[in-house]
Length: 268
Image: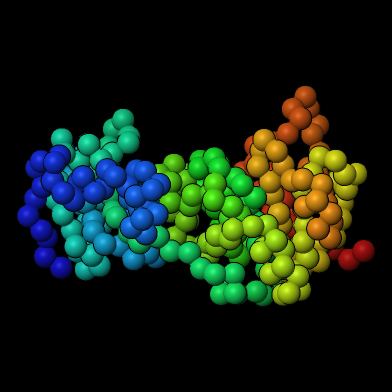
């Protein structure tokens, strides 16, 4: 695809639109998001529906990065942006000079592929975008099968979520549902074990056998899961605290539990 005419003014309509995508109401209204950075932008080009690539040759100086831009021309329109103008759409102290606008993509529960060893993570009202992105990255690293966001507080396409996911937001199936019952009913209908997490149980995460496939339900760091939701699960486990801390960061907890669930068990 041919490059469009270079943009030099911050008031250019495309840059105005890109800046608006910092706000969720505009992302939701358009169904698109803005992501900045070399690795996330390339992951988006590989796995998402990219509308346009924005780059600044004054900022994007490495040969590898410029090669990515050249290859991007076969996938989406590429627009050159002057450094000062590019800086107005960046939330970084030192803009890297590469960003894309891409279409947000989620799937429905019924579209998820369930294998005998599948593990899905469900997040109930998890609103911290940095944590969310790190959780998605952990899900990808641990080989889990997807992330289900429960409630309106979770925004997969927040800039901080995209940044901390390191591009994995485009490679993991993502689902958003209105209520926790939607996720639990889906799990029951498809024969998944429902695993819950709480500090108020004697079962430590390494001391039980997990029946697969499984759905692991996590609550927010501030509130955890209510007793009603814990009662919906087949097994509730806790990660023991050996020091003075009373809890782990949620993203760390997700990673610890996913790797434990996927750890091969020996006989007996």
